[in-house]
Image 1: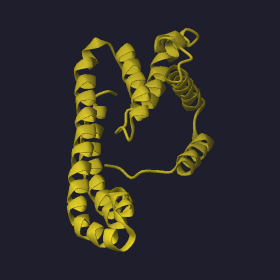
Image 2: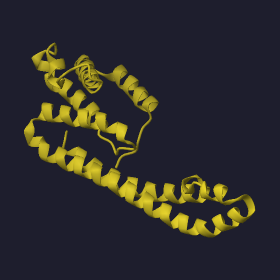
Image 3: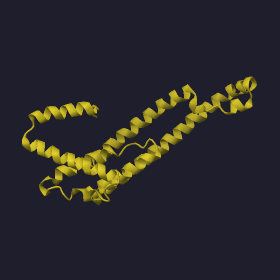
Image 4: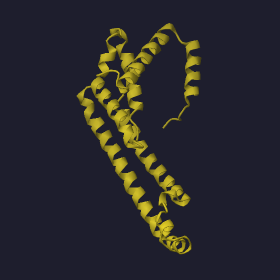
Length: 191
């Protein structure tokens, strides 16, 4: 996998290229950016269908605009960190299917399946780590109950314990890495 660049690095590279870019390259970049804006409007719900945004794109530039839109849509297909990210993920997949046709649905269905497996794995492993720490916490809770009372001991949140957070962060990082790699491979088929 290539290195990840910051927005500033990308902007500086583009600025450098523009200085060297031909008129044709500048024109192509214009239509790629137009496609990116169309995809952003679609994801934000400003367009009913993504193809609705391509009406004013000249036919000879439509492929570059679709390239830009596809890039934005693919970047919005991510591992869901919470349930609220599903709206953008589903919208991006809907846009990809609309642009690429129903033949791409086999890939998008596998992506959705992978993302659901990711969520299930995260929940399952988090619960396992939580149970392990609750078992370890049992002895501590007895000591705290004797010293501070049963109510204080019962209100200890396992997830707030630094050791739990450290262990969970390590495990989640490993899970994220595995699923991110699979997701990137699948997303490469969407281009």
